[in-house]
Length: 468
Image (tube, rainbow, N blue to C red; front, side, top):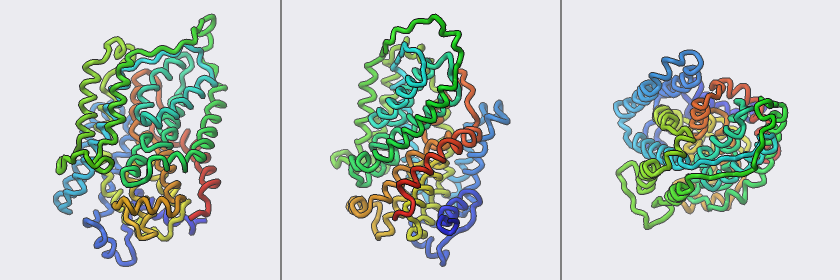
């Protein structure tokens, strides 16, 4: 078993210990790369940032709350200067800047647009109602994205359960609506959208993932139902209280802004040839539209709705600062992983792709992780991920690898607070609502390892073990 999964452990060593891993001839891998590979020691700023994100709110909360922007940007600056001075590599930095701007444009526009919509559910909180709520959120996350669904539904979910809210409610919300739910369409989660831009047919995802998505959802919801059934909450506060059963919506004009955001996602020269490229600028028409929505949706929002939602910019501000550091410091880690994934491509089967893509997606941005392992899988057949016709040929050639990579990149984003953009935003909103959220490590140990990993192992055993 160890021998079978040794490539996974090799890939993890790059992140954990920074060991120098190359092909049998170390210079060969470097020559094959577009730029010189960074020194493995350059993963240290990334590891330090992750450790501080994990320990700051727990052990030195006051210091962390006041200085996390400086820490994130300072560690990112170390990586930027290394690439500029020692590697003379501006291409990697500009590419990462473009990805970050696209990332923050989407998150901020969905955050502000959905913040202007108020949903009131006047029903008594029950385990069944919560399961139906989470299942509904999972479905619509494929239409408005996991970020849109998370920002739209987290506040009403808190209010429904206000007399019995516990951290596990939010954790399962993150599991289902912020991550696993969005696995059926390219709109659902960024890695799937990147696959669509590269040539994966739009409806390939739902056709090949639905029968994996359904049992995963059932298992996670079943665990939630059992836990929620044991939670009696503050039943006295609802004794004698009547519920109308109505669901009210306010600020529906902001649905127009959400529609504009979703449509603008497709305004990419790689999808629509008539869309102009703004190169060499690190952003495009899509990002300009999204940032315009941030301004317009906030300026024209119903102030009563904003107050009812307790809306402020602190959650998106926290994400913006932390992820600028994460995006910058993870450049060396991603490049080393990409190199090793391609070198070891012939040794990786579908099961290894599933676990490697998944585990790294929990700690790195899942979009570039998806692309790196897609590139490695295509390399097994001599195909290039940057050529659209090659991607289409790969899709028709053997779907098991793309299945494993797609499912893992989305599902495993739920492993940590930083696995996917909306995770951190949901956490921040809940903390500001007075919910005592678990720390970074507690989240992993108490919830991810105990609940998610066994479920993901079942999915691996049924769908990917011994295949490819």
